Amino acid sequence: MRSIANGNHYIKVWFDKVNMTDGNHAYTGLKTLQGVENLDSIKVTVVGSMFDDLNN
Image (tube, rainbow, N blue to C red):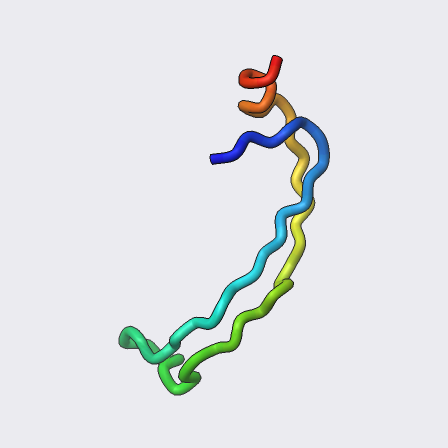
């Protein structure tokens, strides 16, 4: 796990191709879903992370 400096950071959320035919569920007819490169971007605020312990 990478340590992150204090402050505001953005985490990018995405997924690659997903084979929906695996498993026993209702979505098997969807075959393979093409990935979504930028599904969401979430802002997080870090206070007192491991970064402080390792770099101070």
